[in-house]
Amino acid sequence: MATVDRVVCEDCKVRIGSMVARGVVPPVVNELLTKPRRVVTAALPIRHDDGTVRTYNAFRVLYSDARGPGKGGIRFHPEVDEEEVKVLAFLMALKCALVDIPFGGAKGGVQVDPSRLSKGELERLSRAYVRAMLPVLGPRTDIPAPDVNTNEEVMGWMVDEYAFLTGRHEPAAFTGKPLSLGGSQGRREATGWGGAFVLAAYLQYTQKRDIAGLRVAIQGFGNVGSHIAEKLAQMGARVVALSDASCALYREEGLDVPALIAAKREKGSLSCVADGAAQRIPHEALLELDVDVLVPAALAHQIHEGNAQEVRAPIILEMANDPVSPEADAMLAQRGITIIPDILANAGGVVVSYFEWIQNHENRYWTFNEVMEALQAKLQEVTRALLDRCWKEREQCPLRAIAYELAIERILAAERARGHIA
Ligand code: NAD
Image (tube, rainbow, N blue to C red; front, top):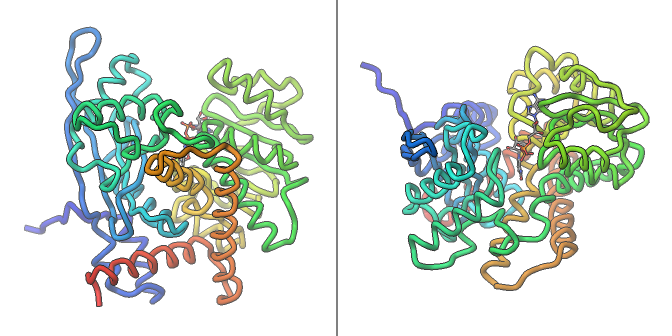
């Protein structure tokens, strides 16, 4: 009977395998980076308000701890599963190595539709997650943060549960916390603003131009999409299209981003009524607009085999995790479309999480401007280093492949220093 290696991350194996085959990373990577170091699964029993009990499947994956403790968000989503958490943990390991912060990569998830839970049920679920995962969490072990459908409030409950169980207030065990519990200024803005800093550094390096006048379309208007829209508009870009799950809006002269953010705050979604001068367009049409930069900031694989041929923007800035499917990636590369990959474009969040962790250890808190200046400097440096490697050393410059290569080299250097490889 054939046996299946349950631990292997199949998707990660494919991504690494193609790099080994091309000879850009050594074969030992197949052994070291196709299996996460630790996978914990749990069933969380939750008592519902109506007295019924349900168990929810929960996961925590530590993909690599070669460079430091695990780092990665916890996602509450009905479709999250073990394989998806492994892939996301793998991407976190690469992201932390690429931006050169002293963390490995991790991720967590609970298979749940949080919109069907009351606030009390959500709190019980968040606390149950910490109880189940306690042995593998901690400021020097594995540090969670918010991700899709989790937020500061959830982190607050988790910090409290962790303190209750260990008898210690340990703010550095979680990032993305409320400010009153040791959160960092700028954490909310970090991912979106970070994407704008990366794009600005990219344009300056490759085209000697700045953001002003750039025409941009953004898919997704949640934490990431709204903050990058805000920052790009402040930097002088014309945000001509925006969408969320409720609708998509287009205005050639540029949308009124602050008004849309205010309307979203009030109504909970774009709802397509806030900007009277804008026109409503079908969701798919946003991805096909003739703009300078397309910013997918919603979900995975939004650009796929079926629509990649229709994309007209010359640059895609991947703010969501994994928004371009591997098939689409190859099709876009053939058409000469530049993809600024997720592990660089959306790294602002984890960089400010790192700043939060430092502040918690030092017990000294930075101002918003200090955080943003440090974030901008960090992302500029990382983007330039990546482009140096691309443009000075290669004829072809597939940014994702070069970013993976650089990250994997750093992880291997740590594995070598630990004596795990020769
Ligand atoms: P969020 O839940 O706050 O926002 C998601 C947005 O996408 C919502 O506005 C939703 O309405 C919209 N959306 C869903 N389906 C859509 C569709 N079909 N078309 C258009 N819009 C749609 O989540 P977020 O925190 O903004 O995260 C977005 C993405 O960025 C995710 O892939 C996440 O993993 C990634 N990311 C987030 C962070 C962070 O710090 N929040 C960091 C790194 C990566």
